[in-house]
Image (cartoon, rainbow over all chains, first blue to last red; front, side, top):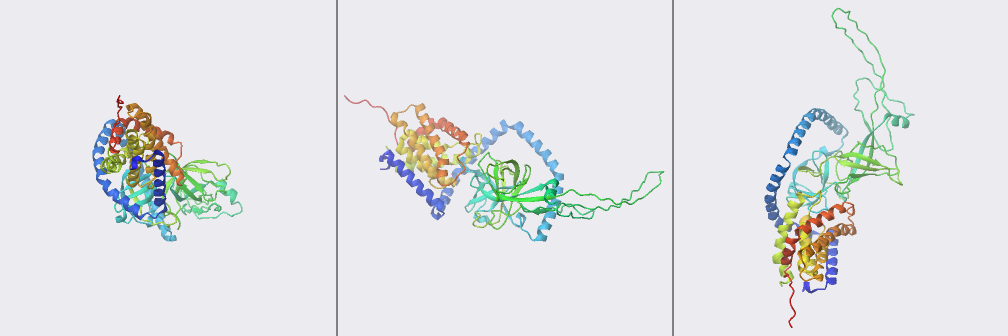
Length: 354
Length: 174
């Protein structure tokens, strides 16, 4: 009966049925559709496993043969990189410890306050119009829709669908993805002095650490920190045959200013092969963000993610017609095409953020 | 010729499960310049070129529904696009009842291009913006080329899945 319909009726039937289904699915009242999806996933699983088991060894062998030299060179380069990073790791660990202390001191929350669940990426989206990956954890592991997902380098996306033993993660490059973000940009001392000319400089005693970085909002600036340094130099001329002398001197020097401005906004994807787009909340304000600044999650009660998950680095700041704030392009830290192990942060965002 | 519902349940669904598994594993992982080849779309277009517009449209719709269920896209979105692909490629049988392989391949290419282009359009119409970009200039040719190469296999397979038989010329009796 179906095939005896005229072509025009077939078209009308298809369009109407599809629009009805899309509407039902997108309205959210989709318990039946979710159950159908779960049942279909169970049916599909053996076929997926079989296809993977057949194709992977062949593809790996082919890749190994054709890319042997590249793999060898990449392996050596990675070894060098690891060696270089060992020194930086010690320094970073010290900074992280201080950061924890400050968080505890000021009772602030960040990503470090939340537990995370490690998962493996088992599949990419088969469609060209979907930037998602599938991971190996689900509701059984405490995963819920909206939770942020990270890898070692930074935020990679959020959980959009959860099943008992797997979840679908929308990547940050997806056009539907948005998260509140902040840029912590260092301001040059010239810029700062022009805005703080009337503020008397602070003084500090020598030996005080320079990490007294002050974070301010977009419209507030911090006074530059000058210091009066009192140094007692006990110069011991220890060379043989010379008279040992000692002297005491007082010098005054100005320490370099460390001023950081915090710019907040929304960051979202633009699709594969395109940078993320950072939009300032107040698009009438002048901004100090510049290429090379790092972008991280802003946190807050209505945010999708806790504060301080790295997102990426600003690669371009392009002026925008009709607005004082520019188009800010951000390159994600995470390599989204080579995901393997990821961590789901057990942070349940506000329903409005999802 | 088998009835369409019978063919859909006994032939199309088992074949679609296998093709869908290939799509989700092989095609999703090994991409051509970042573009995933769409074998399910190629089968939908092949069904149209092999069995005609009406059967092709229903076969494409069923394949798209399975795709939506498996991938998590809004139910009906891919079904509509693949239904249009089957419908479009089926026009080849309006030209000739027994098309040459290359003519069927051309219509499979057209059908797959329509199906691939329809997805961002339907997404846009349903409020999911951001997919109508210049990247389509790369994606559609890659998907179309792959479907064309697969058409010698997928046109007969699609015809069988849609429960149709190959039409042949018959002499009119005197």
